[in-house]
Length: 153
Image (cartoon, rainbow, N blue to C red; front, side, top):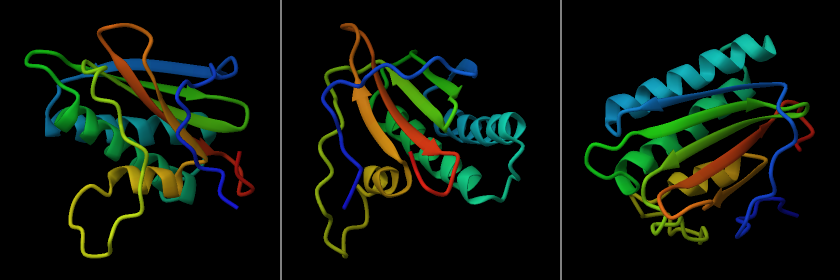
């Protein structure tokens, strides 16, 4: 049984316990800074150690979503936004970029010899849920939820 799916429209999350949103340059450095900040904020808000499995999952998921925003979702001179939400039972990572027409495709199984294109497979494997939302003609948000408990979300 798999609980990973890519819905066409995401339901709005529950009211967050905590929330933070910051903009980063659409560069590799911006993506790296977003990953570091997400893990730092996660550990501060949850009290879980930096080397815990959920913190590592936050690092992987944020790295993939930010990297995709830089690689596939940026326009010259436009930043991406990282939004972090601590909800009662999960931590949500949202990355908003400036290319709403470039939606992430459904994740097909990849042959073992593929050397790229595995980012969303990683997100699907590690996140409790993930998806994308387009709310206007100028941006899209790709999000992933990391369960705070071992039982998942």
